[in-house]
Length: 181
Image 1 (spheres, helix red, strand yellow):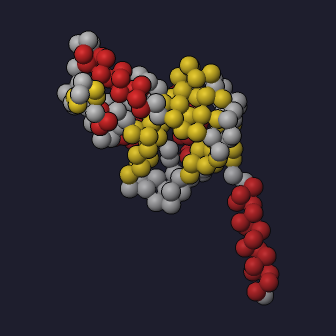
Image 2: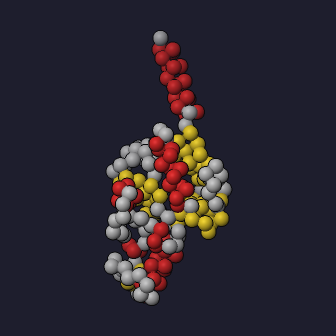
Image 3: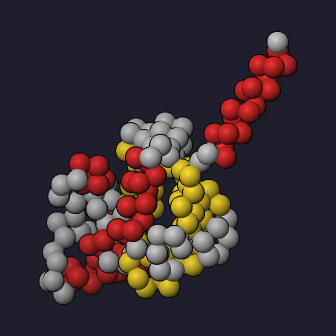
């Protein structure tokens, strides 16, 4: 009886691994040139996987430029060797985590901005041998330049030796109230 139960348990475990849906960057038409913004396509794929019970979003070799993306429950972001998730240098491509979750515009709070965010998610994974590069320095310099030119005054702007402080740029990751990360 114990042997049958153990065999049945292993079979169920293997079926759950096999049944896990995988969507590749090629299948959803991501452009891995490091110049084309892929935020909408990435978010659509993550949302779809989560709505369908979970799965893997696999980024193949390439450099995928993006703004803020929201990881959802039961979704694994897998970066193959040679894949780079590259943060946009444009500060407007980063969205407050509350805006991503609630789907309506929110005032930006520098403590809530990040490249990859998750809120109240469970069973979230980031795996693989690829790289996540937030380009923090480029974003900070862009914020500084826009502020100094008077194009976009940032109420959260602070200077230290005529440089933006690290708190005015988005974080790389911001996971809030998540389980099984």
